[in-house]
Image 1: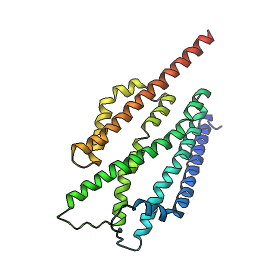
Image 2: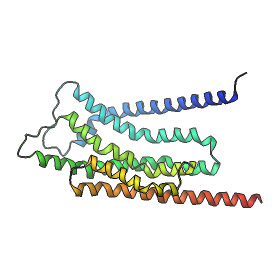
Image 3: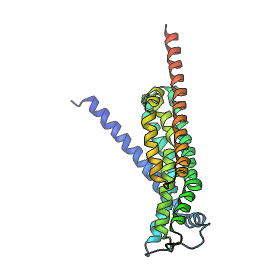
Image 4: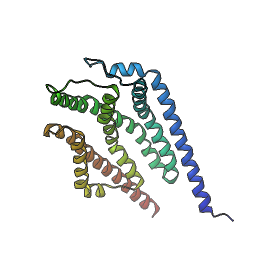
Length: 246
C-alpha cells in the first residue's frame, strides 16, 4: 500500500514541473518574439554612440542579439513566472490572502522596469563616463558590441532584480515567512550587504556610491513598511476571526 504522503509529494513535484515548463515555454516564446524586433531595439540602445560598435567575429552579432532578446524575454516572462508561483502556493492559503498576494504579480513587473530604468538611465551612463574619463589620453577607445552590451546588462539587470525587494517581502510576509520584526533586526546586516553590492558595481568615488546606496536603503525601508502594513492587517483579521468565533 502506497503512503499518501508520498503520493502527495509526487503530485506537488509534478505540478512544480508543469509550472516550470509553462514558464520556460513563455520565456522561449517571448525571446523568439523579441528576436523579431531585436535590430530595432539594438538601434535604439546605441542611438547616442558616436562610433559604430566593433565585431571581432561573425558569430558575435548573434550573441549580442541573443543577449538583448534574452533581457527583453526575462522582463516579459517575470509576471508569468510570478503567476505560476502564486498558483503553486495558493492552495495552502486562505481566500483573503490569495486575493491580496495576487497584487504581487503586476507589482514585480513595475518594480523590475523601474530597476532597469534606474540602471540604464542613471547608473550605466555615469559608470561609462567614468571609464571613458579614465582611459582618455592614454588609450584609443574602441568598443566591441559583445563587451559593450555585457557591461550594459551588468549595470541594469541586477537592479531590476534588486528593485523586486518590496514585492518579494510583501509576498513572504503574506505567507508568514517574514515579518517586520525580523526585517528590523536584520537591518544592519542588510545595509552592510547592500553597501557591498553598491560599492562593487559602481566606480571608486563616493558620489557614485551614494547615488546607488541611497535607493537601495530606501527600498529596504519601503519593504519594512510594506511588511508592517501586511502584518498588521493579518493580525487584525485573526483577531476578528477569533472574536466572531467566541
